[in-house]
Length: 389
Image 1 (cartoon, helix red, strand yellow):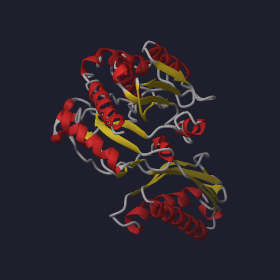
Image 2: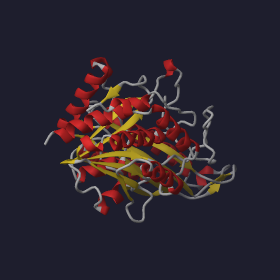
Image 3: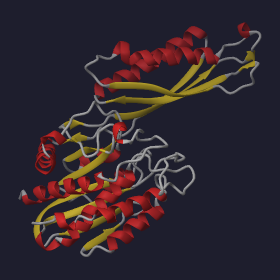
């Protein structure tokens, strides 16, 4: 089956630039969805369905011959970041930017759909192109798609993500957990307000909060084995009051990242012990809330072997690399409730290539040279899975 001539990089670049120019936040992707639908409507043989009450879009292409069902997922939402990248297709929506590469993901999967629509007569099985809303905001859009039942017949799921610290075109895929539990926490410390000139009359919540920050930062370094992956980051500390007043309350918040459920549970317990002990020592009260995030993505061994084999065949063994542990979270893990999944990472440009900034940075831009690479990987892997009857 000769599918490579059908790959159209120019189309994917045009799709990507439009999406980058008009980004939308999680659960608000109405124009993005309409644009995806319009693109899919131009591809013969693709049925379009939308899970009710969502901004997600699913394109379905049934091959001429019976076979398995493969779901290919792309996330479509953007982040609340004011873009600072110097590109001609810079975001026109103030305070919103595709700084996580979802524009690349979406354009790539549109490219895959375009190719498959041209070889439908030679295709075994069915491919579902899942353009999923709201990856960036818990509880995420994958959960809604799973609950809709519209992908419950899938035998396998495939997904990919750009990775800014890898050179353009390098691919990383390994079996087992790929991402982390992305838990969030918030702490409210209540003390006693007073005059800044008479701290002995008050219970200083800023001082209490500072001790909490210092001690939370030591949980991983002093309580977690270096063989386990874990992160505790305090990202917010607010204690509003006048400069001569010791305020009554302070709020802190941040994120906990773990890959093992036992380590996750231990850190939750240890955080409460640390905060409780510090507040008790200073005579303050506290409330600690921890909200669990997505489960880790888990790469199936068989599917991982397909991705690795395909990368070697298409680009050579030197293309495959294994980066350091990824502690980000992604709701693509929800599809594991239905069928095995695989998630591979594609290098989107390193600093030495002129791509200096990481994802979630206001200046992040991915190399468009990875569009045909991602497209080829998805197509070749999917054809192997569909051929395995």
